[in-house]
Image 1 (cartoon, rainbow, N blue to C red):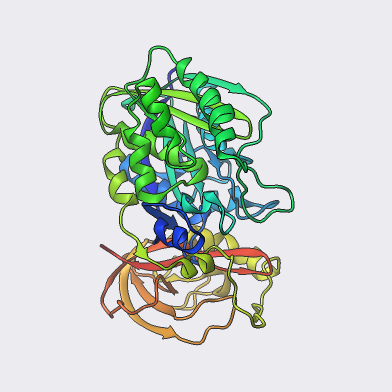
Image 2 (image 1 turned 60 degrees about the vertical axis):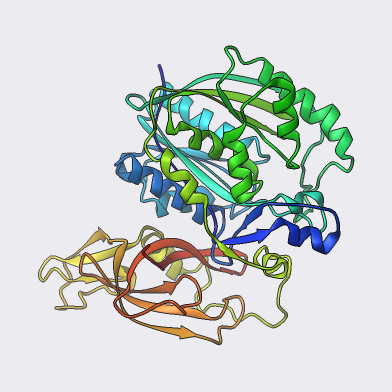
Length: 460
C-alpha cells in the first residue's frame, strides 16, 4: 500500500543569533543565522506549531488523527509524559496511538518511517509524524557555530495526496559521531574534524546515497559543519538546495533539519531524497511527488524572521547562563491535585458551556457552576484560538523561574468566552482591541517539570 503525504507544516523559534557572534567569542569563522528558542519555547511548542500549520494546510481536523509519532533528541522529560502532553495540546483523541523516538538525529527519519508503517499496516488511517529539535551545544564547541532549532510535521494517510513515501535504504556501523553521554547536559563533537569527514560522514552517508536507484532529482542532506554536504554534493553531483536553504535560515536543528528540507522540496513535482545520520546509522528515504503538497509553499516563510539576540541572550535562553537568586515555587506543585484535575483542559484549551444560558466558563476546573447564571449543567467545549484583547497588564517584577516583563492578557475569544492568559514577548506592542491568536508556549519549568499553556500572539 502506498502511503501519501496529505500536508506538511514547519515552525522556527522566535530568536536569531548571528553565527559570527559565536565565532567572535571563541575565535574562528562562521556565517549564517541560528534559530534559538526563547524562554517560553522548546521542542514541544515548536512541534505543536508545525503540526497545527500542517493540519490547517490540509484542512484536516485533529480528531481524525489516530496516531502521533514524534522525534526529538531533547524531549521535555527524560522520563515522563512528553508525547501525551503534545497529543493533548493538539487535541488528538485519547485513543490515539504512537511513540516518542529519540537518541540521535536519525530519530527524525525513524518517526516518519514508523508512522508510515502504521498507516501501511492499517493500524491507523491518518498519522502525524512530527520532528522538532533544539540541540544544546557546549559553549565553545564547533557545533555551537551551527546549532539551531526548528520543527516540521507530516500528515500521512492511506489514500489521496500528491506525494508518496518510497524506498528506504539504511546501513549502520558502531562509530562515534555527535553524542551526549548519560551525565552530559550538552552535545559533544568528535574531536578530530578530518577523522569525522574522511572515516565517518563521507563513507557512511555517501554509501547510503549511492545505493538509491534511480537517483532523486534533489537531496536533503545532513550538514553538521556547514561544508560537508557541499563537499559530498560536488563529489556525487547532487542538488542539495532543499537542505541548504534550511541550514541558511535556522542552522542545524538536529533531527529536524533534513526532514524540513524534504518537506519544503514538495512544493513541486519530482523525487526527493531525504537522508539522516546519527547514532551510528545512515539512511535515505525517497519521496515521489506529482504535484505540490499542501503547506509546502509556506515553509520558507514559516522559517523566516525572528528577533536578533546577542550571544549572551542566546546562552541565557538555552539555560547555559542562569541568574542567581532563590526561585519562588508555585503554590500548586506540578504533581498535585490541581494539575491532575486541570492539566488536560490547560493543554487542550477547554471551556465549559452552560446548557441553560450558553455562557462559557474558563477554566472549567475552578468553575463548577456557570459564571453567568450559576447553573450546573455544563458541557466541555474546545475554545476558539482567536480573539481580541479586552485588557492587559505587564508585570515587571516576576521572580525566578518566571521571566519579566510578563504580559497578562484578558481576551474575548471569537466564540464568546473570556480568558486570561500570558502574552508572548514583553508586551510593548500590545494594545486593547488587538487581534490575537493563542499558541502553546512553555510558561516555566517548575521543580523540574515544564508547565505549558496558551499565550496571546498578535495576528500578522
